[in-house]
Image 1 (cartoon, rainbow, N blue to C red):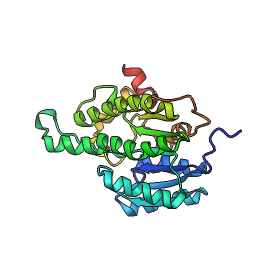
Image 2 (spheres, rainbow, N blue to C red):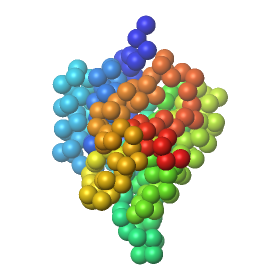
Image 3 (cartoon, rainbow, N blue to C red):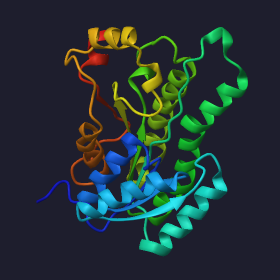
Image 4 (cartoon, one colour):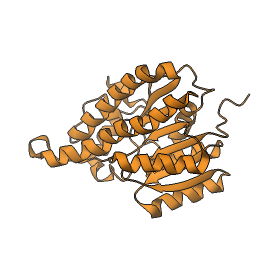
Length: 255
């Protein structure tokens, strides 16, 4: 029995055109899932789609603003027209800022919270309801952050939003469990990506490495195993409400 076979499943990957989201989308496609890449940057989405096709998967691109319920409802309708089902939802949108706490404006707070938290809630309402109503189970995977568990400097709003994602994950795991829809989160450690490269000064990098037992940053592909594990209803059939860390030991060392 192949515990990680996703053949016949359809996965919605919101933010699937990002560095980390794209790597996980490719992994889902490579294990047989039909992958709906949801994002606003069509050029980046096309790159991910081609990568999925190269590993023998199937993928289509869907444009949406993840903070707008009507956009997500349209994606649901379009994906159902494409494959007739939705089995996996992965929430990968992310926005960060190094603004010091006393300089933080509420416009920035709202913007980051909308992308990092509101989008997760909206997608869970739209796609989660579909999975619950169809009665065939499913998997929702939220992407959190090591900063949701360890206080880090210069990422106040981002950390608060990701801590809230952890809470939402646990709440929805309980809420959706009777319908066998599993809700889990992946907590990446430090993976250089678009949203955090500007924060990785030499001083900050040295500090991070000093608290990371494996003494290196993660590679996007190192999230693929966790993504496929949580997506599979065979491999993780009794796993829900879990916060799965992939961080080189960072959170284990500093807590």
